[in-house]
Length: 499
Image 1 (tube, rainbow, N blue to C red):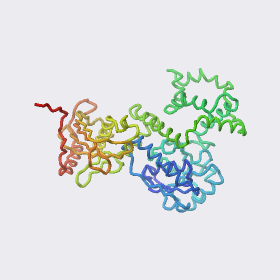
Image 2 (image 1 turned 45 degrees about the vertical axis):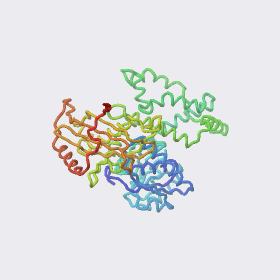
Image 3 (image 1 turned 90 degrees about the horizontal axis):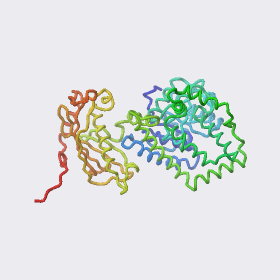
Image 4 (image 1 turned 135 degrees about the vertical axis):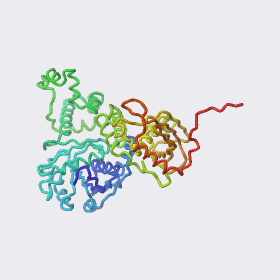
C-alpha cells in the first residue's frame, strides 16, 4: 500500500444496503469496478437503482468532468466479491458479532496488502480488528448518506491499525472526491454522529413533551442553522456572532447560558406510544411523497447547494472546494477528452446535458452552450500546457472575441461532445473553432469560434506565448493539418441587404 499511488481497479463490497450500494456507485462513477456481495434478494435492484440516481446527480454536479465508468458487478458469494480485489469496503448492519465474524472471513481470504475499511457508524475499530490475522490493514471509513454525493468520510484507526493503512485509505478516498476527517482518538460514534445523536436525543425529548412535531423540528433546522451548517459549521458561525472580538467575546456573552437547564440530552424511553407518535408525525410530514421521490428531491437540493458553494471565493468553499479539487484532479479523464485521434480530431469536452440547463422550451439554454465551449477551451489550453498551474503562475489566455452558431437542439440527458480545430496561431494569439455534437454523431448542434490573446496576468497586458506552449500548439496544428477548414470559420453576423 502506497498512499497517493493507490488506485485499485477492482473494489470488493460486502453489504449492499443503502450505504454499501452508495459506495458502489461512487466507486463505479470514479472508474473502479465495484463487486458487491449481499445475500438479500433485492441487493441487485437496490444497487442498480442507486447507481442510476448517482449517475444522474453526478451529471448535474460535474457536467463534462466525469471519467469513464467502472463496472457494477454482483457477486454470488463472498469469495467471488473478494477475488482479485485491491480494496474492500464492509457495510454490514451495526451488529458487532456479525461484523467481527465476516471481517474474520474477509481477512482470511485476502492478501495481507489489501486494505479493509468498515463503514461502521460507531463501533470501535480496536474491537473489530481484534480477531484478525492482519489487524494493521483494518480501518474505519465511515461515510454519510447518500455516499455518492456527501463528501465527508471519517477515518478512525484501531490500536493495531498502521499509519500506512490510514494514509493509503485516506488518499484513495480523496481521489474519489471525498473530504477526509481523521478521528484523533477512538470514541463511540466518532465525531459527526455524536453531534447528530445529541440533536436527535433533544428532538425526541421535545416530541415526547409535546413541545414540537417532527415537521416543526426539521423546520427549525432547515430554515435556520442548517443553512449555515452547510458551509460554516457551528464554531465558525459562533465566532462571527462574537463580532470583531471573535470567539472569546461570544463565550463571555453566551457561555453562562450553558449552566441553564435548556437541553435534555438523555433520550426518553422509546415506548410504543412515543414510537407511534414519531412515526405518525413523520408520515404526516412526508405527505404521501414516496421515499424514492424524497431521495430525488434530496439529491437535487444537494447538487445545487454544492455547485453553489463551488462558486464561492477563488477556490470554492466547504463542500464546493472539495468538488473543485476533485474536478481539477480528474481534468481530462472524461471519455476521449484531451485526446487527439489519428486524423487530428481533438475531443475537448464530453458530458451530459443537465436538467438545470434546460429552458422553458425543453432545450439546452443559450448561456450553457457558452459554458460548454468555455470549458472546452480550458481543456485545450490544458493540452498545450496552459492549464491551472500555468494560470496560477501568472500567465493565461484571454478570450477576446466569440462567435456562436446554434444549428440544432440539445435535450435533457443527452450526451454531447465538443471537438476542436486550431485554425491559426501567432506569437500572441490562438484561433479556435469548436463543434458540438450529440455523442456518436457528426451532425453539429452548435459551433463556436474563439480568438484568444496570451497575457501576462500580473502586468495586465498581452505577452508572447512561451516556447514550450508554442511548440505544443504547433504540434497540434501539424496533427490537424489534413482536417478541412470549417465552412463557417471567419463568418460574421450579418443581415443580407436586398438590392
